[in-house]
Amino acid sequence: MTPPVNELVDADRGYINPLVFTDQGVYEQELEQVFGRSWLFLAHGSQVPKRGDFIQTYMGEDPVLVVRQKDGSVKAFLNQCRHRGMRICRSDQGTSRTFTCSYHGWAYDLEGNLVNVPQEERAYRNEIDKSKWGALKVPRIAEYKGFYFGTWSADVPEFEDYLGDMAYYFDAVFGRWDNGVELVEGTSKWVIDCNWKFASEQFASDMYHAEVSHASALIALHEDPAFWAGTSHQTLMPGRQFGGNGHGSGSFWADSIGFSESMYNSPALSEWVTANADEALRNVSEQQLLKVAGHNTIFPNFSWLAGPATMRVWHPRGPGQIEVWAWTYVPKDAPDEVKAAYRRMTQRTFSPAGSFETDDGENWTEIQQVLRGWKARNNTFNAQMGLGHDERDVHGLPGRTSDALSESAARGFYQRWSDLMAGLSWSDIAELDAARQAKEALHQEV
Ligand code: FES
Image 1 (tube, rainbow, N blue to C red):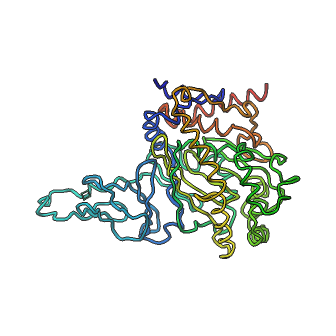
Image 2: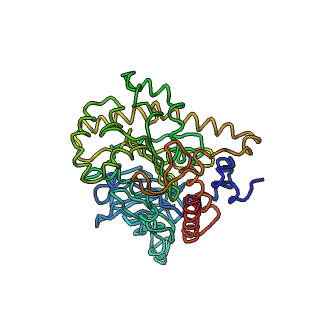
């Protein structure tokens, strides 16, 4: 029997019940309580540059259309026809003036309003009120530095408040160039047989696995064996991990501008990054440039890795499967040669054919298979690394941080998950967060 959802995670003690990764009932609740009430990544503006441009994506398992409007704004609506529920649009992306359902032909405009019903006079005697049968609109959309997020929730805090201190870590990567970033065309999509939280949590918090899981890939990738000797070796590098509002970010600290890029054997890329350091330093601090460039997740399922320039959404597909949608992001103003280098770097490292990506996927699918066992599913997981050793506002980094080798952000991720799953309102969660922070401060004083 599944325990109550609020007993599945004990973030204070670092306990995780594996049923959070396997149970169908828990999953159904997640769709409503987590994906139905959080801000979810919809699109980057470069995917829908002109009016009428659209892409199809998902909010949890709900298909949505994201559309550039005539006035330049971006809106989104459920990709479900109100007649019998067919997808209104079956293309992944394109440009259109209207969307016509391929089942019986109801047609919707760019905002999702129902504008035409075939045979309206004969079939409906002109009695259908089209204004009442538009597509379900995503009520709140936020744009942040060219990225669009949407939520079904009326009471989730404004997006920047939802981000909180995570904005510092987001800006460090995506706010660094005068004209921002754009996505390389083409979405890599693939399926992994694992729960979505394995992927999200790892990108929020787990630097610990890298040296073990990626040991061979790290050696194989770098053509100069000496690269991994001396101070560049990760275990010798200092670093921090941030966790807050369920989000997470972590990195080993670079010792020079362009360090992350230098790992991937592209002199053109390294030279360009170094040559354009002044522009970056006009937009972000040296601290952000050198110390905040690693793994990241915005709760619940939007992640990026700053070194390999990959960003992705972990779309849930049941408790035991995800569909990964991944992109390469590049500085918009970079020359083609540099953009191509970023693209190659992503393909070699974090893509369906990337050497690191396959390491990660193998771990997650293996765990999911182990969890088919009854005993295995009822055997508490340990998430105690660094427990009790968090600090606030140290090393010039905002928010709660810990050593890079910690599970602090993972505990925060599961805490936020647990709060939402318990059905707490966003105002209750804000009160609880404040109380937790006060308790934390007291603990540090003692
Ligand atoms: Fe769309 Fe019938 S289901 S028109």
